[in-house]
Image 1 (cartoon, rainbow over the protein chains, first blue to last red):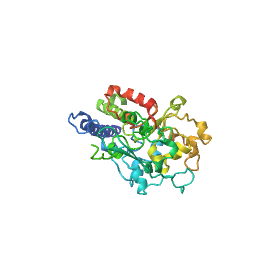
Image 2 (image 1 turned 30 degrees about the horizontal axis):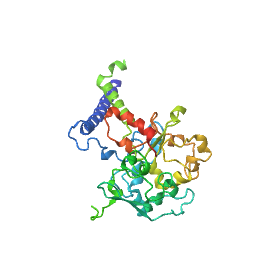
Image 3 (image 1 turned 180 degrees about the vertical axis):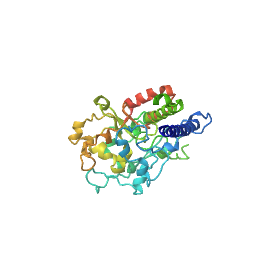
Image 4 (image 1 turned 90 degrees about the vertical axis):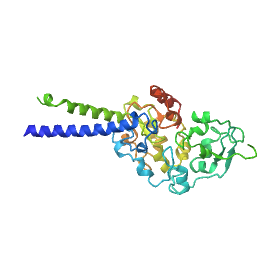
Length: 197
Length: 149
């Protein structure tokens, strides 16, 4: 009897192991080994918004990994975007899908919003940058940016894409938490005057 | 007796499963954009590093609450936070006091990271630069030193 039980156990383990191996090898073959695969160096769509248990940074041995909320549970109803968290956070507030607290203790406190667009003419061929205070003050306080990151005076701030990529100026948030710098046209949004070209 | 009778295929499968589990265990590629690892003191103190999920917190609070009112600098690892300050109601402790959010005895909910990960912001621009695999560890190091949060 023991022998039969043991053999059954052996077959089940071997079968399960083979199955897991095959699935993983197929995934690896598809992802890494096909030299002509699409998006060879990109993160697969299936890996977006992974749950804490499988995101590779939470330790499955701690109870946190199992208890923390998976991003997909929270992101269900929020407007989508093409990068970052794949959520358009500004639109989520504009469309009233989200109303994060502006005051730690008071859920009713309204944000102090400034509706003022700043147009920055850029040197190259890219469209000019329109900086909307409105979207930014929905989230931030004036003192978060002024005067440490941006001097509140026209022409006083030298900004380059290089410095943004290195995490300065706009790059203090964009490329870390706010939408990444790959979304060029969300900032470079105002076509230059035809006369000036 | 039993050990002798376990066939090689079974052992191989077991080893392979372990390797696969470890592979996914140490791979941070699936972390959420903006997830911050804080490991200034954790490893040295014998606890797991902290994983701070920006996405979870910005659903509930606007940036200004932490980065203005609570004084968090825009820099991962730039705040010199320790448990005493948290217990005294500074930084995380302003909310994580059992009233607005769960309190500090739930150690593993914050200290939930894979040990030995450096302080960094996941999927920040520096991290996302496509570099040869041999340079990967260097990028992780430089992003740990250089990125703000």
